[in-house]
Image 1 (cartoon, each protein chain N blue to C red):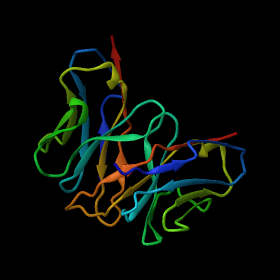
Image 2: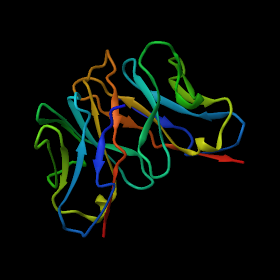
Image 3: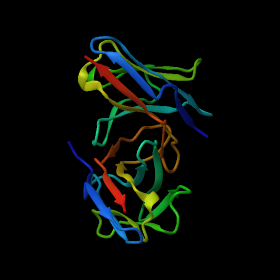
Image 4: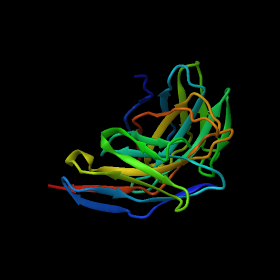
Length: 117
Length: 114
């Protein structure tokens, strides 16, 4: 069964450093997402990406965050200058399409646990 | 705007007894609803989905959920809990439209006692 692959599984970084979280979505999927889950809290939407541009972003996704699909297979989330409160599990997901009248499968990766010290 | 409310943050059951995890939704139109499970240090796994077909939805590992429009509920049940069911469960609604983002509930941590 096709999978969404995320690397690394764990990352520890110093406050103020840049981090890049990597994801390889399912190859025929067109929509890509990042979600995050701060320890003990619910999973929150960060950003969606379609046709090489952001289609929606949440309030959390400020100027410190950016996403990119650099080579047609990888989908990355960059945090420019990490803060302690960025410590969380970050999930990548992809889906074939969108639309209320038809459900398109959503597949999550297993997550990257980011710890900012 | 759509939202989901999970009524219990923790549920504890004995192995072999029924499981009930409660979820209420709010939506201005007929929603698509899901239950996801997260085992410790693992990713999010889809248990089951409701997309306006049959109101009783069967999922993996013996779980099922019933969509009740009159009660705006989508409770998750299982007749007999197994130790391996211990995990966190999320009720989720999808927004549809251009983005199709998921809105997660706060989660219910299920403990299964031997």
